[in-house]
Length: 300
Image (tube, rainbow, N blue to C red; front, side):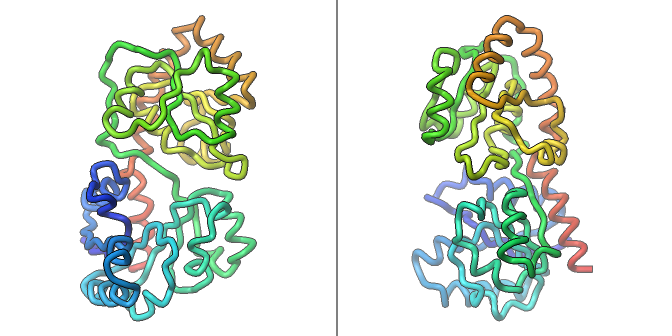
């Protein structure tokens, strides 16, 4: 069994119930990887960078590897006295944000996972020195959130993500067919998905069209048919989701597809059944196998 120093955001707002880090930590433990956790945000809020550096240095002495998740605005000097290999998982789209550039400029990591292929493209342009030790790690879903219990459907189609101007433009042209739910999280968020036949996905930004929203996994896990704006075919192939998601190119196509499905409930049922198998390979427990393989490779 390996022991890793898992540095992330573990105690945000004193409620870890819905944090991905909570489920990722469980997935590590389920796969025989013991974790020692440090919440860098809470330490920096209460103390300072020097204190964070001392805590990391001390705890790393009892671990085999350091695993840093997110790490916005952290200075590489924090890790200068760490003697074990380090993996960095940059979970935000770096083509939209620059808050981990200092970490990417350095050479301190044995491996770096990035959020998408667009992120990888930026790595090749702005940080070519790390290209050979960098790969994409896709989002996933906690296995605990998969639930295919049959319950009465209240909605034909819903959209329950944050609204950007771009999303509003798509939804405005389809407001009669899609129930828009805003600001709902946690148990109620999942309940709304369970009560819907269809979940709609629209990219938040035109600069980040190959982002695979976690909402897609969440909808599949509640047996929704997912209709999405066009997705990166390479990502669809990686996730083994070919033929599982219906893709559309513009708001007009979305409207036409919704009309077609409203008149063909058997098609909806067929896609809903596909989601049950598809989600099995897109849980955090499954994704941790990729990280574990890289840990074993580095430590060997």
